[in-house]
Image (tube, rainbow, N blue to C red; front, side, top):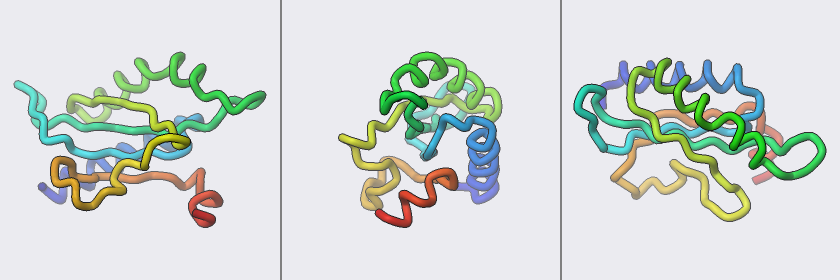
Length: 119
């Protein structure tokens, strides 16, 4: 993997995270899948903050996921698959260092610093 590309993707991911306050954590990894004109695809996974009046995050996801995917693809210039992490039932992406099918390019979670310190 080209270090310059890694830095570019990580910088864009951090910039995108900074302007999307509903995203509590973000992971970006390269899937190894390739497209005809965009090189390898990226898999972006987000953990969302619950809405103010409940613990439900699905309204945020349903309202914004398509626009977020288009925005990330436009910013990064590569095909992006966007998924939501249900932290109650799933392990965080990039947490499995033995999974050679994906390469972690970025992990951004500065909004969630208090929770991570307790984990």
